[in-house]
Structure formats: structure tokens, C-alpha cells
Image 1: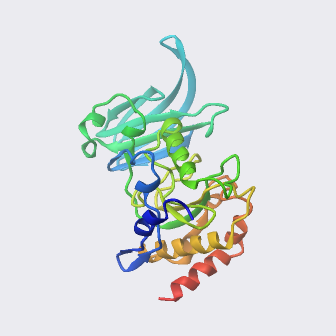
Image 2: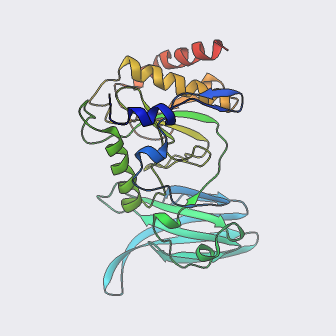
Image 3: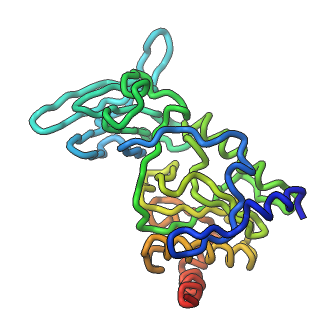
Length: 305
């Protein structure tokens, strides 16, 4: 048993939410290195490629191209954006890390990922209504780091399985909480994420760790829109390791709760690979999605009510 057993007996107690009971969860405050960052706003965040269009309320934004330009004596990633709202149009060349206001919206170019980078070819964009932002963000011409990122509210329509896809497997002798702290720190430093990208994460024993608040959209390094997705992730690499019975049962328990809580059916269950060009959640987890066994496990739990 872990040294935190006494504490977890309190923080893992099931919580009644709405009309359903949440499975035992290790709360964020127990494992975190720092509290989640960010600000709730009427906003959207997406990773899109050159030629793609992002529509948010009345504003239509097209990524025309990306380039590397010499600015202030150094090479800088730049994206050309075409903006349309009603009969108004504008074209802007915006450097990575810059932000601007136009048409009542605040647009931040969070990142432009070049060759060799994770997400190469993608532009990470954030748009929000100016009136929904804290004043210091609304008037900033900088995208800023993780502390300035926006928490995007969403309504759950999908329950989606991931794995963290680490370079090495999670071993029985490791502390999974340290993996989560590493993920949180890496996400803030390298991706400007305000918290870990997933809503709940599971270790080898099937213990469930609370990630980012599931009322806000998660994150991805791919092009799919995680808005509406309740993100469940296995800690480790399931191209290299196989899930245990305890893990599969914990996934099914958590998904059944998410489905009840959000008024969905088992048809909402999918894997990351259903929505993006990726092998996630790994070759040893995908069969449970592809043969319907995970949906059957969840359906059995839903039928018990």
C-alpha cells in the first residue's frame, strides 16, 4: 500500500454528483505540483493547418500559410491569417506568441509548430470574446504562457479513451503521481496548457486520478476538436504494455458514470483514433474498443441501476 493510504481514504471517497455516484477518485490537490492555471472565458482553442478555417461566433479565421521570417535579428515562426466578419475582412501576419483584438474578439497565436516539432504543421490558436476576458488578457498583445490560457467550457457529447503515450511503460515500481506532475509541467512549459490535457487518468492498479476539470475542454497535439469529449487516459504506453483487468474495470466504471452524468449512451464511447490520425490509445487498448467489449462492460454497469 502507498504511504498516502490514510489520506486517500478521505479524498477517494465516492462523490454524489447529480443523480449518479462518481467512482473513487484521487483528487488533483493530492498529486499536483501546482494548482491548475488559466481563466474561464467564452472561447475556443484549436490546432489547425494551413488552408483550414476556424469559425467562432461571427468571426471566420483562415490560416493562409506559415513561414519563418527574420525579425529582430532572429528567425521567427509567422502565420498569415485572413479574418472575416460580416462585410469586413483583414489579413495579418502574426508571429508565434503574439495576440491581437479584432471584431470584438481576442485572438492569440499560442504556437506555430515547425518541422521536427510535435504537431509539426499545426498552428495553435485561441479566440475569445473580449468582454469575457480578464482585462489584463483582453488588452495584451502577447499570447503569454500557461497562466494566460483560457478554460473553454463545453457540453459533453463523447467519452473518449487515450493513453499518455510516454516513451517508456509505466512500471509497478514507479509513482504514477510523479508521471502526472511531469506531464503537467511539460504541458505548461512546452504546450502552454493550463493543466494536464485529460480529465481523468488511470494507473496500473486502476486507481483514478483527477485531471483537469471535466467541465472545460481538454487538449490534444492533433487536429481533432476535443470540445465535447470527456477524456479518459491510461498512464503509460499501451503500444508497449497491456491493460490489466483492474484497469479495464476502472475504465468501464468511470465511463458508465460519465455517460449517466451527461445523459448519453454507450454509442458515445470511442478512442482518440476515431477522431484523428493516431494510434492512440495504443494497440493493446484498441481491441477493447474495436470488438465492442468495452461498450458491453459499460452497458452492464448502466443496466444495474
